[in-house]
Image (cartoon, rainbow, N blue to C red; front, side):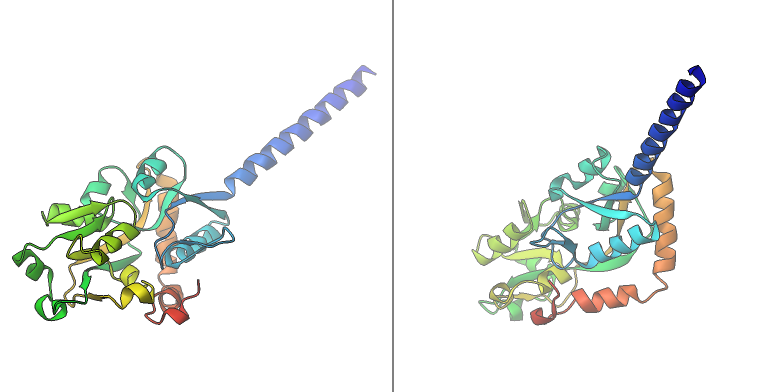
Length: 259
């Protein structure tokens, strides 16, 4: 009888251990990715709770490469780096611009793609004839709106531009349309994705302001995941996925957008 109970206890111990190991492995199959929704066409949270967008598609490819399930953790843009540092996620999604300021806090993976930083103004008062470049705005001491915490804001601060800083992605555009500022500084594809009621009122200055290098970010002590990401980027860059996603998301014809 003693042997029977010993065998039973041992069996229960093995069963509990297996369940614990199974649950532990299941948790390891999740890749928690910090994102900030509302930045079309890069990161869009759909009405059904799913995520779509250019950067989201790349992150889904990375999770698939790791054989993990992507879990997108939606955080406010201004708190995206603190969220990573405080372990609310494993990494920040592709889409974060590499800047000297951010390099002091986080570690970036290899560059995935480049973006163009551009200016937009209202289509009034012959602005399209009088303003072609950033230098033209600086010459006339024009006020430029930027979104807090974005690469636009960081670039404008470094260059000591005459700026007004707003929280969120919509506020800088609203400031432009309500004549609180003279121009807005943003990434070109975000401006191209504006709805017709906004895009018809603005124009993008022809001269680009700055070329930005874009990647994903990691905690500085997260060596393994960063290494895996760099290996993924090396292989992924040889596929046609970048071109496929560019054609899907970076279009001027709003009817072709897949949102």
